[in-house]
Length: 333
Image (cartoon, rainbow, N blue to C red; front, side):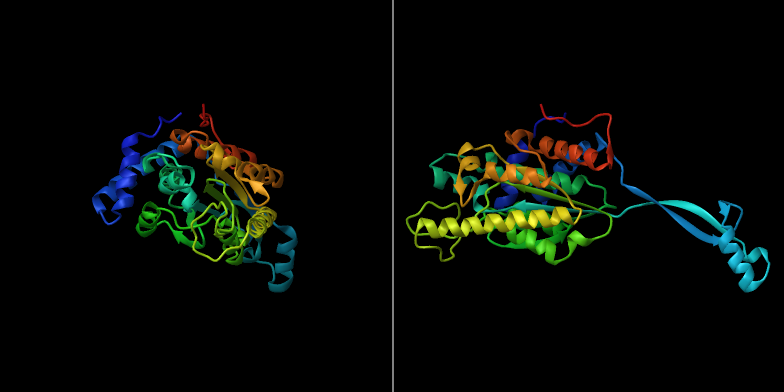
């Protein structure tokens, strides 16, 4: 069990968000997140899946002689040791691709929740701050040999980006970018054929679980500040939200069918948000639908334990998929 993230790190995250052009603070924040990620990764033994292939080549004394192929070579070229064909097995690591989709919508921020629910929530204790720390810990902690990318979504999807200094700055600088259109991020992933890549594919989604259209209907309760003309009444807005939710579920089904392992990390620290129904589903109800699809769910009920929940969920998913063994599995207590 890794110790809870200190408030100092959260305040450092806020400092970087308010001044993303401060290279000293940003580098310190990245280093702290890297230390956390490396500790979490090292506490378990991840085994990249391997596959065995049969290789035929000129016999060199190792392996066995492939008699059928050797006879064919003799018939074509005559009897000679140069045409004796050997057969051997080699084991190669499968390609491992990881995509992190991070929710940067308004509902992840403290300022929006204060405005929407009349709260007094400091940004250092908001879901977006814990999500940024967990995301950077994951990105920085994963082996550099593994292909890891990240995508951001709010009222539109941005990315995917490779692990480079610029994207770390982009993640930290976010402070609410509109509605919660995760369907656009998933659609972009499918269109770019990321789900069709060879080898093992892991998708990690970090969000507060709210899925809605982002349309703003005058005089009607809404879950975003996106300045897009919305429906004129509650029914129209509900239909728009329901359509986005159905598209989201369909995209998740397609991604699972393409053989992608998915870890969904909903942040349920606010019962109002978890139970708020926009469209057909609340965030909590949507999670139940995702479970029926076969998606691994790792809900966060305490922001101080978000990093632990993320890596505990990864451990559970990896064990189920067969590319993880651990004598010291991370558990959330």
